[in-house]
Length: 257
Ligand SMILES: N[C@@H](CCC(=O)N[C@@H](CS)C(=O)NCC(=O)O)C(=O)O
Image 1 (cartoon, rainbow, N blue to C red):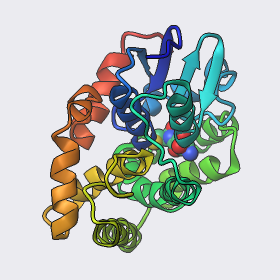
Image 2: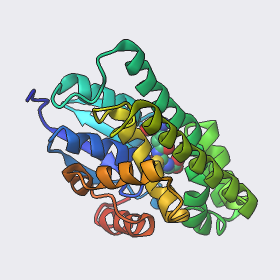
Image 3: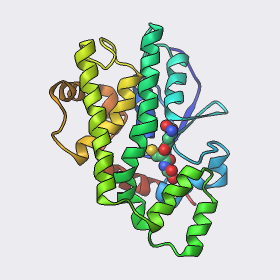
Image 4: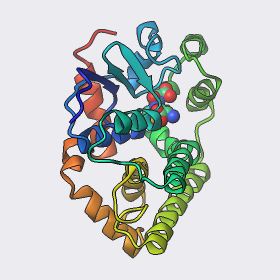
């Protein structure tokens, strides 16, 4: 196996993007040191972290002295740097398809999953802020999109209808997984090999399963059982959403603000 030198992952246990990278590291059999950031204490908005990830979000993987950001790009980097086992297909059209899945997950499923997730973990904190504290918090957030999200948590939380519509989007993603498994014959999204597309979708399926249990269609349920039975699933330490949020809070406690 190619050696990358020491790896340091800044992440949060319940973060979908972090889970995706932990799955890839596990599939590649790579050891790494983990540093938990407590998103509810805004450790990701501190200047030292924004120097590593200018967007102030997790994950960030330090490889030697280089900070890698964006979970899909980190996973592609890992696949290129550590070729075995390969997690990208050989055929260019199939490689395009894997990237399309990764982009779809990031563009569509991530904003959807934020609605139940943030309502549960961020809203109870943000809604208590005074106007002065809100202004101070927003000033530390580097991107307009996340400023708007935190503002909504503080002053205009997601409605039940918005959360239900977001879960419908995740249900549609699961329907697309079913279609892929049918069209390509499984056992994985792209056919006979596990790829980064399976890893990209997995954190969103786990949240969908928690929010709407028992809704996976037959092929997707089998794919899901297969994926979660892999040693990498255990190694990536993906637990329940609340339990993983609490775990991040407890572990990050040890670190000063
Ligand atoms: N496109 C980014 C998304 C990363 C992301 O949204 N991370 C979330 C956790 S899953 C985060 O840091 N949220 C905290 C915040 O936005 O304040 C990636 O794939 O790395």
